[in-house]
Length: 519
Image 1 (tube, helix red, strand yellow):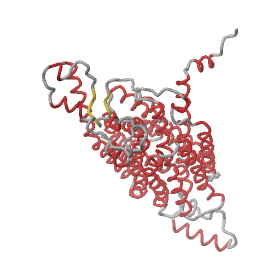
Image 2 (image 1 turned 90 degrees about the horizontal axis):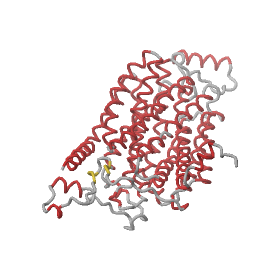
Image 3 (image 1 turned 135 degrees about the vertical axis):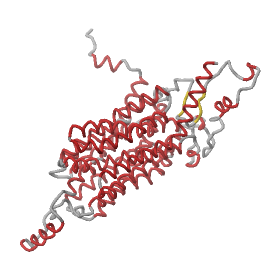
Image 4 (image 1 turned 90 degrees about the vertical axis):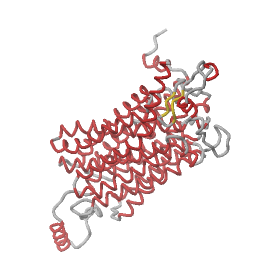
């Protein structure tokens, strides 16, 4: 009998459960990467929607002259400064309005999406959202082919797309949370969350390929890809291991440190008050009972079956702090997402295609940052402290980026990689491992359906910052790009301040645990 090929031996080495988990990991990775792929084109096309041109006086003179010598039909796009109506002197505010309309709709819709997602089959809910997102992404690009110059057409396309894209994140996080337990969750989700950066990179490359020749295709092609992935979602997505008779992965550790949101829980089978003949000290009693007293009421009171209420999710320890921290962290990340190519164009004086290609290095850094954050948080068993450490390093790095990026292309490349890692690391950790930890918090007493709502609250609050960041960048950038970076550094500082209480709890928990082991 011939020996099996190495690839087949590798495939057959997986158990049935492992095979299904690997499949769901890959499928959800691709599904959400396609969402981000469709969000990126707007940042690449900005350099084409408004081009650097002659002064406004010269432009008005040119238009008058063109009207005299050719009074017949208006050219496909008469403006010499880009695509009307983005050819005006207030183009940064208009482009910022496109970002804000998408992100504001996304933030508002996210709070409702988690509540709706808990009550509908994930496969149908996510499929419908992806098909609709493909339609509205392509709709923006059709404005090029049908010569549309009405600002409200593009704003409405952005609003509609922002609303339907809220179906994505709660659905995929709930699905991946169902399939993977808490053991090494930070590393697993750090690798999985690289779909954000992979989608951004692919979206940048696809959009940049057509941006100078036919920018409408920069939206139509990603729209078709998202719709196609929606079809694959309908055909193959499995919501829960129980649907295919697979086992659920149990927690692999008897000792848990939960994000600083609740004090450490230590199993003590032999050391207790009765056996020692003396009461435990007050601090140790608090450590052991803190999370037990934070039980969250659900809608029906049937553990594992009832959908949690919005206020009930807010009462889970740590949800409010991490949500507000993500608001500022996402403000920074999405400002880079939507404005980095235009900044590179202005500073490095590159065309839209080259600026779009160069901006992908920020997302490459983000991939390593997300994985590193998950690895460190698993090793230290401290989610909040890991986020705080990276936020503390991110603020001075942003200042260095604003100064070094003016020194040449090589320096810009290095700082893009470092900044991407430090900016996206905390953002990735909070939206994945932290959200999954809190959504399966022991105060929920096994209610697995709460994960979608908790994820939506955290990401929805973060999306408020994602909406504010690009808007503020559009308003501040006319006064100078340095002021935009100062705003981003302040946002990082605020994110760090909001985590201080949880960091203090984690450090105190570690100190108490060390003291207990010594005794």
